[in-house]
Amino acid sequence: MTRTARDLMEITIRELAPDPRANPLVPLIARGEADRGVLAALALEQRLVIPADRRAFQHLADRSAAEPDSAAFFTALAEGEALAGEHLEPFAAACGVDAARADAYEALPGCQAYPAHVAWLALNAAPADAVLAVTANFSAWGGYCATIAKALRAHYGFTDEACAFFDFFAEPAPDLDRTALAAVRAAMDAGSLDEHHARRHGRLLQSYEAMFWETLCSSAAPVRQE
Image (cartoon, rainbow, N blue to C red; front, side, top):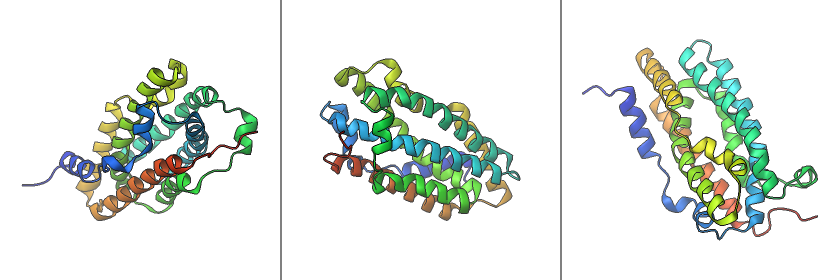
């Protein structure tokens, strides 16, 4: 039986699904047991991740001129990251992050490995391979964001505005999913999709995301106090 693009995407998402134990921080947030300083560090790290990913996705879109579906996918991601950056600021403010605190913050290498690899993909990966890898990774990220958004309201008293960053990523994105599917299908039809490379990219993204959460969780006092 010939495997379809949808089959490949579903199989890849299932194969790359992270071990539930790979994220020690989100369960703490879900129970209201995470320190507010760690939430502030999450905001500060994301203030670096979001613009880096936006530029990387835009570069992938620019490299995808010969693959319009891939270009549309990465353009949508870049636009989404720009909007996410706007939503991030109320969350950061609710965590007590101001301009001085942000300027004084020293980024954690384990948190910044993820955007570093996204930048590597922007420079080196075949666009459709990156589409498949990123789509698989986002499947887990959306679930984390939904859990955090619920917990911030229930345990930390955050407003809807302060939770909007996580609400944004938790929402289903059927148009984006359709664009990703079209990009993968087009690459399969053209014989240009390398499933081995796509899975390798996706596995590394999942590993670096796990490192992001582990690093935050293991940092006893990741935010410098003035």
